[in-house]
Image (spheres, rainbow, N blue to C red):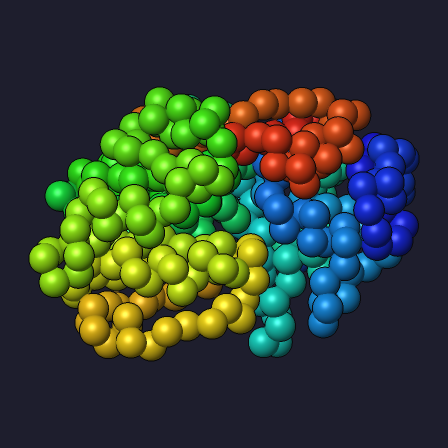
Length: 337
């Protein structure tokens, strides 16, 4: 099969579009002919190598995919060749997490072998591209905003790093709930795009101090200033500053730390504002089921920056790493089933 492969960890140069032999199915598995694979920054970490996580070499990135069942192991029941499916990237076995595009070969490929328990039926009225966007970024955002967090009509919500997959999903989910969204991104162009998605206000954090913006717009903590919900999955030097933007009794929601996981924290802001800090870790199947239904009914639509063929996957991955995108990049394939 054709795939985007790396034989060693390293820079973008280690990724190659080439032939690689499909692995044999083992009991309990199904082979999926990938139709769409959406990219996540996790793909970059997989290529670079992550401490403590053993990635099989050669490796294939790609956590999120949707496609058609092309082969079924003899012991698998309930699935047939040609079935439309969304793949949940993770499964647990004997207390250990296994994830395609990480500890298992991923979906930058014509085919991917997964456990049958990872398959979710894909309705005819949801496209492969839209479905492929849902698990990692959108499932993570759904769990953070609506399952673990509590975003409601009338809330004011500040989202830091709003232009990527998790950020745009958080924006859409907050607007779906009737909240007012203040979206922060790193360029005027991205801010304009966020306004087109429904953001009520935007902040270009490269030219504007978001803490100062918050104070000027809303006032001080004890005069009712700040936002009901602050979404910060970037961490790093934004973390301590973002705590200054929370309204008395407000929430901070986090699901990651792309800019650093051990920033300093001034505890005085936490107790003084009586804020509630809620963490969420990835997604559960229930989050994907709800997102899939919202997408099917048209209440929710993933934001897709571009769709490219598999043979252009290395260039797409480079655009991902350089953050030259808004929303999600999708790789499409059309191998026979």
